[in-house]
Image 1 (tube, rainbow, N blue to C red):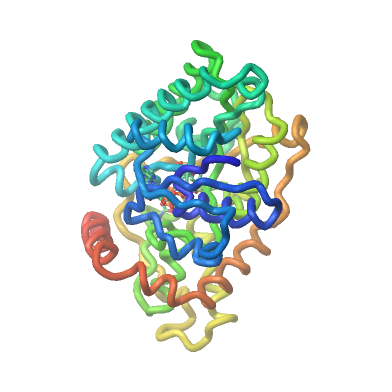
Image 2: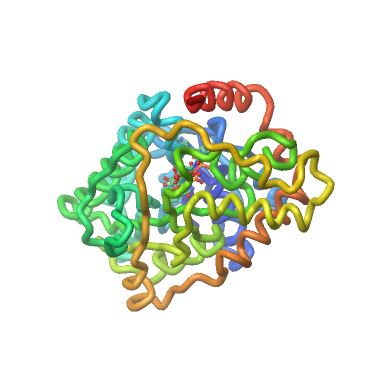
Amino acid sequence: MILVTGGAGFIGANFILDWLAAGDEAVVNLDKLTYAGNLDNLRTLREDERHVFVAGDIGDRGLVEALLREHRPRAIVNFAAESHVDRSIHGPAEFVQTNVVGTFNLLESVRTYWTRLPADEQAAFRFLHVSTDEVYGSLDPTAPAFTETTPYAPNSPYSASKAASDHLVRAYHHTYGLPVLTTNCSNNYGPLQFPEKLIPLVIHNALAGKPLPIYGDGSNVRDWLYVSDHCSAIRRVLKAGQAGEVYNIGGCNEKTNLDVVKTLCAILDELHPGSPVTPHARLITFVKDRPGHDRRYAIDAGKIERELGWTPSETFESGIRKTVAWYLANQDWVAHLTSGEYCNWVSRNYADHQA
Ligand code: NAD
Ligand code: DAU
């Protein structure tokens, strides 16, 4: 079996659902259930014995060491993290705690476990660390895309904390021989994404007739990858990646934020003409920029394609339509998340974006 951390969040839940749809190897899912963790994401697995959920922190060494002893996973996929850049600007401490200290404690627990495995199990074991393209910093408009050897230059507390965790993972390979794999992926979108991130936030606000906040002039560029393509890339790296190697994952879909939002508005005009305000693009509102806002990310995914034969299945056009359709069909899912803590967050964050 494998141990997945952060499996109740957006990408982790998609990964577990896809993993168990593709095969029968069981998953232990360790998740702290922060505001971003949601067991409802995994409700279809409630009766499925192949999924064992454990509520807890990756930094809890007693708990993690007990889980490793009990379940003896052959691999770990580490998704657990604080993941939202804007939240890292408001409160960086939690990001250092989970992403840096938590990953360090997890690595220590795993090292203790791995060191005691028989030689053949040690050789086959993998620790796959899920990271981000944001660790490479910001690109000029015409600069070549990030490769695996682009120097790290993180600009937000979030990306700095992810960069620190990547360095620890690397060090555990070089120093202790732990068979690690690191993946650095671009912006994901798709079902189950918490509506604090651009795409689900825009869909949610558009359906309610609320402003669609665009930071700065809307010309910042991101590369977008449909979440199930990220999951298939991780499965591929876990299966065939070389221990100690880094793999960039991307969709070859560079878009400005304004283009993304206009595309969402056009699809909503077509699929949901009954919204309170149409055409939905009337709701687009430019607001004060995010501090330290990276201008552009772009991924060169040539290594994973050449060495492991992975390419994405979805285009941006097909993935974004599926995503809008999913949110339209799952408005209850969103409604459960958008009270209480969510409202507090939205008013705190967007108060700072008033001009
Ligand atoms: P998310 O915020 O939706 O989910 C994070 C999950 O981790 C939640 O279920 C949360 O409860 C859990 N968690 C948080 N702290 C924990 C802790 N201390 N111990 C155990 N569980 C904890 O995040 P996501 O968007 O699914 O991202 C998953 C991973 O992928 C992160 O490491 C992120 O940096 C990385 N990543 C995300 C993207 C993206 O576009 N979302 C792109 C590239 C990489
Ligand atoms: O690149 C990978 C990263 O992508 C992941 O590591 C992060 O976990 C993930 O959150 C994401 O980071 P971004 O900051 O790029 O994603 P976000 O959805 O927050 O913002 C996307 C772009 O849209 C960014 O340029 C900021 C802008 N934006 C965002 C929000 C929430 C707006 O213009 N308005 C908004 O209200």
